[in-house]
Amino acid sequence: MVSLDVTGAISTAWEYAKKHGLIIAGVLLLLSLVSSSMQSLFGGPSLSNDEARQLGEEIGRGNMQALAEFGKVMSQGIGASIISFIFSIITCIVSFALYNLCLGLMSGRFSECSFDAFKMDPMTYVKAFVIEMITGIIMVIAFLLCVIPFFFVAPRLIMAPLYQIDHPEAGIMDSIKASWNMSSDNTMSLLGLGFICFGIAIVGFFCCCVGVYFAQAIEYFALCAAYYQLRSNVN
Image (cartoon, rainbow, N blue to C red):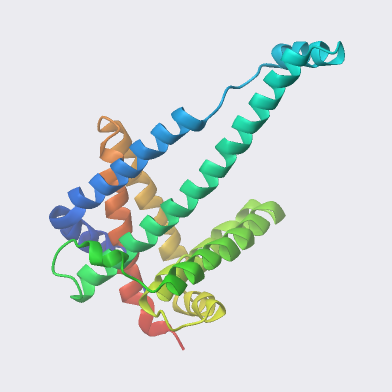
């Protein structure tokens, strides 16, 4: 059973981030800017409690203009929700592609940052997305039961999307099981890696906020480095 070398994972992540981190950070920054623009354009108006009550009273009096205004607010709210959902999917696609890129750079499949990282089978994206949903639900349940179990469950499931991306032929449950097996006896080490990455994110945030995107690039590489250390633990 291989034990995770946290220091080694962070060191490897830093070396790769020095070479490729700026490009990944640029992609993440662009994604954030597009998200902000979409929210600004399609966010729709928000009503305070007083405004909503007043609008309701006007509708109750038979004010058709108020009814039309209510319909406009509702339609814009629905539109904003749809845009938000679509952008969430886009964010997942980009995230999975970046994991594929980091895995490829570390394994030698890619010699440099390339859009070929996006060229995965559509079913790989679908399965990775379903895995994120399933593991997310499990983590929420663990958190609701008690905060402490969450910190033991989350590290055991975090590798599932990476395994799926690295093994496109694997089934959804196979990837979740693989993550659980490879992280066996490494829960605390993975938890420590998570806290270190969180610390790096905080440092990045204070570097004029823009540094947070480079910090995210380090986190991508750190998780992939940990994955390559532990993948031989899969039974």
